[in-house]
Image 1 (cartoon, rainbow, N blue to C red):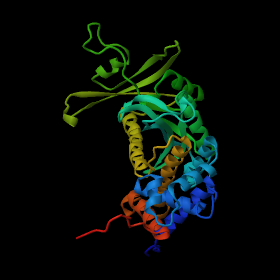
Image 2: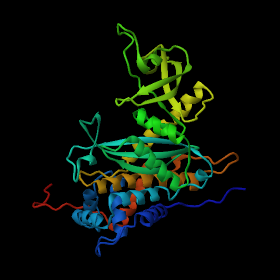
Image 3: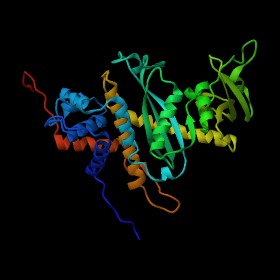
Image 4: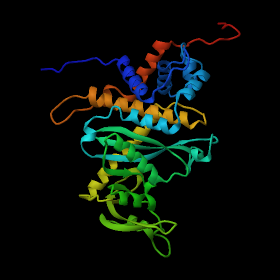
Length: 392
């Protein structure tokens, strides 16, 4: 017996996304033309076009002016801490109940958006890191993801200030996840989190964690020989060990080390043995070297999420951190809607679990649905005014 067939339309997707955003973000009407529904429609259009709010207002015939939309957002949005709480509630609005039944593998990472301007209120708004895209100044956002059966839901988001310790960032993300009922089985972290302060916090809080161990110390060709954690990179066979990190203030943290050795086999034009060095702890007991490697590989799916974030993030040059947080949060909310659609609506039921086919509705295709619907509702401004006629 064939299962029943249903039709999902752009109106259905737009209505669900708008209801989710309005329920949690709680935008208010700001005049007869800048209603909450119109603002969300314009924001969806700007996200789909990967353009600015001003460009979206200019492209839609029935949209308010860019200054009116900008002023309406600033007038109706709360303070940045409250907006962050609302964005997190919107991110958690479509989480499947299965994610709350048992502990899930989670991943935490920092996302840096290059910034070439000055701060608006105080210097801590702009994060400093290694130079990228011609600048060492960024607006930084930390995210927590849940990885389950091919679905990657963004559970928590927080903006990161320049002077904010990373252990406080992790604590805030885990607190937001706990409010949604999501508990981590273990944490997969980027090598940038491998510091004494973070490791001590994770060990004291008894969170299981796995991350790459940064290689520091003398190089093998040094007259005195290799030293520090770089010793593990010289191993030719996989093995287990322990290593103690020391901070500038003299604090220490000891972690377990897994070294997974593999043959490069001509990958990226390289040959010979390669040692992958991981740090783990907090009660995590790996079953094998291969388990450590394959488990951490699941964290690389975050890079796909960040790529999709860029496909839906409204571009802006504003110095207002409030709007920048809104645009990043909106992109992640739309991505969560897309993941929810595939997991709960478009998936195929079968014995042993649902089968997910992302080719049914790619993320960019869903965004184009939202763009076309905005153009149908507000109209397209497809004329240009000139002082002289065209002469053929």
